[in-house]
Image 1 (tube, rainbow, N blue to C red):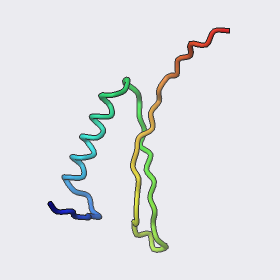
Image 2: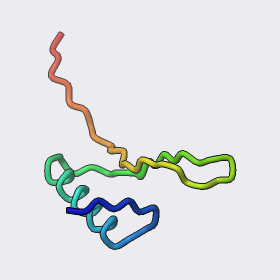
Image 3: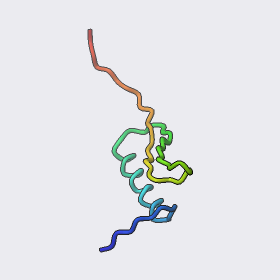
Image 4: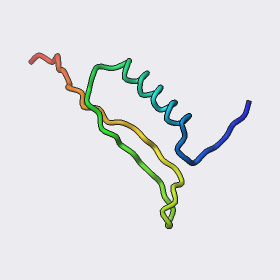
Length: 66
């Protein structure tokens, strides 16, 4: 088994991201989503770390009776 660290866009990274999104979407109701990306850069603008996610617009249902 080998572990490789990459800091570039690749077909493998895109494929893994697509599979994660497909799985997550299969476990929730249909909802509009927007990308939410967080990046850590050094003083020169070089990417050091990042987090990519999606926000969801889900309607909330309340069963509270007063």
